Length: 119
Image 1 (cartoon, helix red, strand yellow):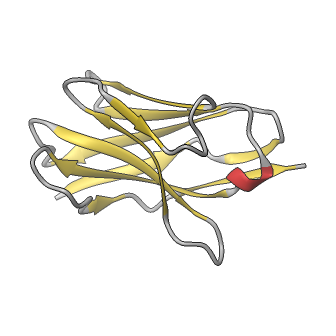
Image 2 (tube, helix red, strand yellow):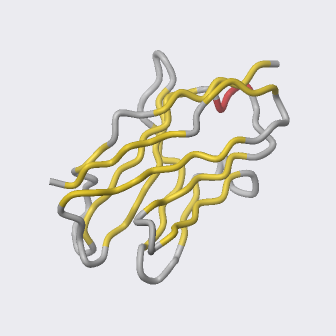
């Protein structure tokens, strides 16, 4: 019921930056966790970052901590992922997902946006 659309991906050189956006629409929840995941070819889908919508609490994978920042704009119903100090190993399709507070699985997913980091 919740629709998520990612944007902002592209090609960037190592050390560069990108900002990804995820716009939510449809039947959104009164409170939720919004998350970013990524998947590279041949790899498992990997958790990247999450933000608790109301409280603003954030969580990051160790591999991106200090380089990526997740944030949200409540008025725009949009979550962002600021990617900085990018490395070639960050290359992946980045997906936005959400789950209601009180659940453990992310049930709604966007279609993803490609991030390619060249060396």
